[in-house]
Length: 123
Image 1 (cartoon, rainbow, N blue to C red):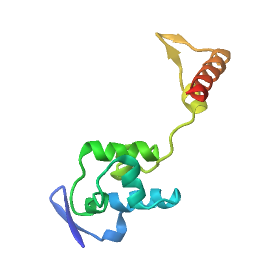
Image 2: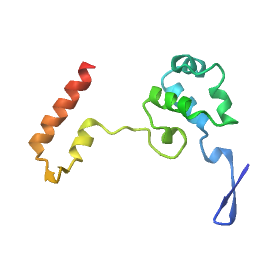
Image 3: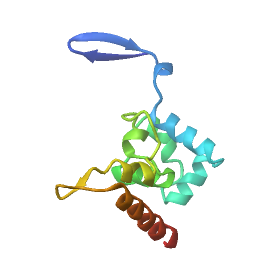
């Protein structure tokens, strides 16, 4: 059990009440059917390093490599965001309201979606 101090009050927090960085990475790796060792090899992180992150802090560079591999934010890995969902191109473009102060009409939003999707499909 850990003790957390918030606004001069102490709260007891059980490990089961939150996911650690390592727990989150294991969950993402399991979803992709890979081991932590395979993740380390794929990202160029030294053997056994990720498992040590339950007791020590990772280098920012290595944390970014893992986030990029799983296409999530580092904030998600660290438990600062609840969702690992990346918004779709449609959602992003639909939420655009204006460019340089001028509204973007719906028909132009459709053109923007097609351009972005076409570009990404060719990479």
